[in-house]
Length: 120
Image (tube, rainbow, N blue to C red; front, side, top):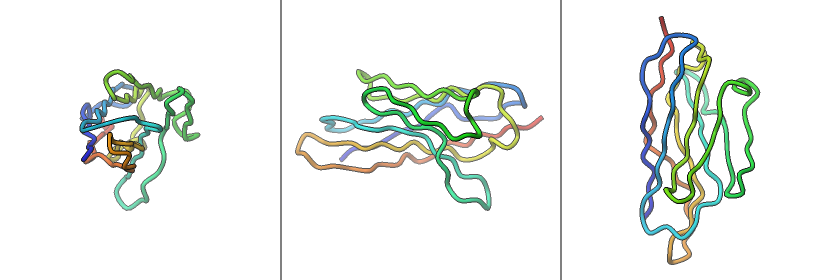
């Protein structure tokens, strides 16, 4: 069994910054892609950013230039640095990863979500 645990959400004023973290745990053999998604009230879950094991990144147009995704392979952790936050960024942010465990079983895992609220 593998799991993802997120942290770092909270309340921030417009223009402020937050850093989200997501750590994978369990009997992990390897992690391919990791990413962040978000879901605002009444809206569908949407992609924010992804990063592969080779460091290739992909961002939603709405966050390009403001958010940065990174990962620490040794810690099985992915980060999302969010700058110049806007009220429209308010959502529950979910971590996602494609993980292979030591038995060769592949998982597409979601974290429990962390609330980000941008408001004055």
